[in-house]
Image 1: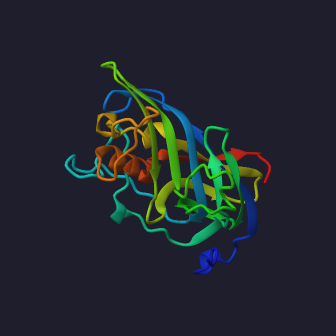
Image 2: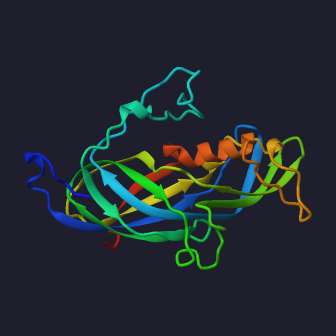
Image 3: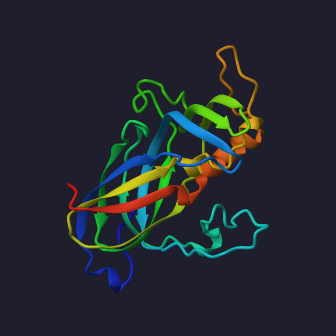
Length: 241
């Protein structure tokens, strides 16, 4: 990747680095189907993180489209996003335990400039990056308990693998040489917001249900992980670079 290359506007860009970390935000309310979810294990294999100049333009879409407003949050129409010039990247694959305070993903090799978005790649873990095999070869692993207002309780264990990067995550900042770091907070409530746990498998001998490949639950979890609004990216002033 060539950082900050292009026209004359990039001639004054300066090299810099900043730390990038990932943490999580817990669910705070029942999801769309009335399930209160308590995550007990959430691990993700994070690959390359790239920062771009292009800004994510949000627009209200017709309700009958998949990108319509969900829960009051506008999702970006994919045709409205152009990444533009690349301004920074973290090239590292590691397993992050989101319920254990998260982790530092690495230092971004970057340049100063006008940042508008980032791209997050989930990677297939290896024995070297997932030494305890908590992911079982998958990119995302979520285990927990879901309780419904009607009285049902489901103990679940699910995984996700995405075929492509999560593009167009909003991060707008004029980046100079100021000290600080980037924090990516995964909103677990949005990851799990669409799931109807009534569609999971029957519990196994240990009382745990999984998400069948063609089930509403699996499709909803994939959509949640793909949702760019589930990733809250902030600049932490003064943090160690």
